[in-house]
Each structure stands twice: as C-alpha cells, then as structure tokens.
Length: 221
Image (tube, rainbow, N blue to C red; front, side):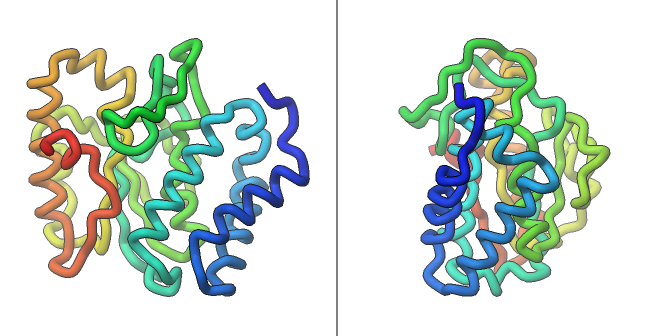
C-alpha cells in the first residue's frame, strides 16, 4: 500500500492519460480535469491507499478516448452511466478490469467500502464539459452531476427516462458488485437483468448515439 502518491507519480499519471488524445488542447483538458478531481475528491490520496483506483481512472479514460477522439465532441453531450458507482459502494472479492470475464483482476482482501467504485466516470465527464446522468442504488447525494436512485434489478427501472434522450451510454459496474451478485447468485437471473439493460440502452440511445461500454452486451456474447 502506498502512503503517498508522489509528485513524480502524479506527473507520470497525467502524462500517460493525456497521451490518449492527440490534440494538445485535449491533453491540457485531461490534465486539468485530473487536477480538479484531486481537489474535489482527493483523487491522489485515494490512489495512494488503493492501487485499483488508478486502474479504474485509466480504464474509463481509455474508453472515452476510443469513443471520442476529440474532446470537443463531448461538449454538452448527454451521457448516461448505468450503475455509475456511489459513495457507499463495496469492493468485491476480486474486480475484473474491462469485460466481466477479463483475466486482468485486482484481488481484494475485504468487501468493505472502496474508492474504486465512486462515480468517477460521471465526475470526469462533468469536468470535461459533458452532461452526465448517473443511476445507482448507492449514495450520490453530494454529487454535482444529475443522478437518480434506481434499483436496476427491477424490470422497467429505467422507464422514467425518455426515449432516445442520450447521446451515449455506459454500463460497467452492476454485474461485478457484491450487492448485485448476492441478490442474483445464479447466472440465468443475471442474464435476465442484462437483457433488460440491453432493451433500455436501445430505447434510450439517440439514433446517432453510441455505446461507450456495456457489460450487459458482453454477457450476451
């Protein structure tokens, strides 16, 4: 466990993330966004305590760069993050980076609270000028982005959101959460939830919208 995320580590981290974009202005935006995340949410302190936080931030920004090679394209875009994470999220026994069955895993020694599953993607999007909307069952009361308390295990839980109202959608945390797997221990039941999420994603996405990442789709491959 790292006690401090050093200044040199900070520079290396920002440099690595900035290089995901080619445009110099985009690189500067990323650097500024990371600094703001540290000021608002003590990002570097949490990275020092939990190595998985660094991996999560890198993973999310890689997805964003693959979807939006220019950060100008996300300005004012309405982006839905399904199971966005919260300030009461717990750590699973192991967490898989990428698809639900990826080989790259971070082993956890407990299932207590973790900063890994705070709503980092919505926070990043907000700093970069998008309009993120997060849905989760955990605590999001103090977050600055639009958010809703939603039980995604219930059919029709997202029906309150209007058709074709999002420019982009992500779901990436539901199926790995200990709360969800305890509630739905059988794969068949998880696939039913995944099917409902796929239906909702198709309904909610604008005709020219994009899927940034979907674990629900990965489960059905």
